[in-house]
Image 1 (tube, rainbow, N blue to C red):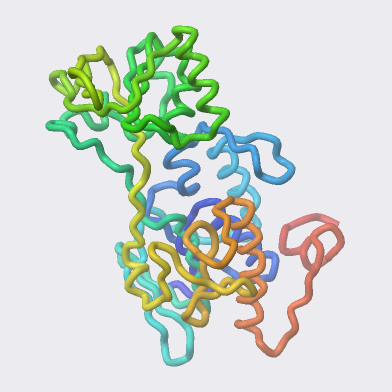
Image 2 (tube, helix red, strand yellow; image 1 turned 90 degrees about the horizontal axis):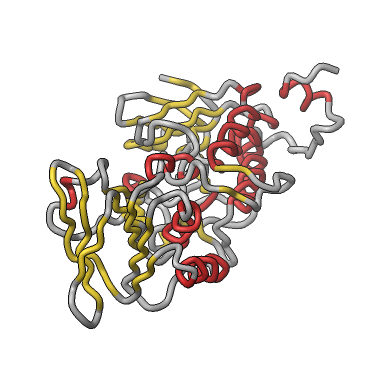
Length: 341
């Protein structure tokens, strides 16, 4: 049994920053995440994709942001339990919580913070015969190594930000790109659509709207062509070495949905003072929570983590007033951060 102040469910940016905010207040945290590496969506889905809206950091990748957050929380020596899913949460008679993971790791804690992003998420799969024969070989739902597509013929399926981001990123590197979208209008950022349309007008790529993939042709896991069926007209074969599918994510709350919390569709309702759920002592920050005016931005999750930390400190030590102390001048903050005076 691991004794700790707080168990954080989720090792994405908000979960990692929650460790930092709790650490500044002298609270110990243990982090649990079902994926095998910290960083959440930032490292799982777009480690090389640039992020522009982190305060004071003009640009960084998802991987760089994750590594910076891990460096920031080093002084607090939090436990990191990766590849484990929280399966049991039970309130004890003394108002603490018993938590157990899929690997049998057990915790006793005084509060829980759910920072699980959109929950357990999986890319929506393409529905064509034998797609699974190519998945992970030449059919991809995420890009982990962009270099493997250099000089290759690509068919990219989708009409959202991910699809167009990778069109723009790989244009000029791949031998040929064909973008296929089942609708006439795109759901991506207008600037991305404009840039993509210019590439198509210049002959640097092909674009097919109002069409969908009907079949994949190939052998032994290697794609050779994609059969595309337009809304009107006959189907056509497009040569391809790789197929990239970006149909979005299918989020699942998983065991969190069974914890008796006030669920709002696939998010968790919280207040905006403490970011506490309907269960006292259980908090939620980041994309998984909901409140009026909620914006799913990393910087908003950081703000939520800060306020949740103060609320948890007050819950654990109700007899003491929690004062704001500044890391620039506070000797206590410097001691906790390991800063030499």
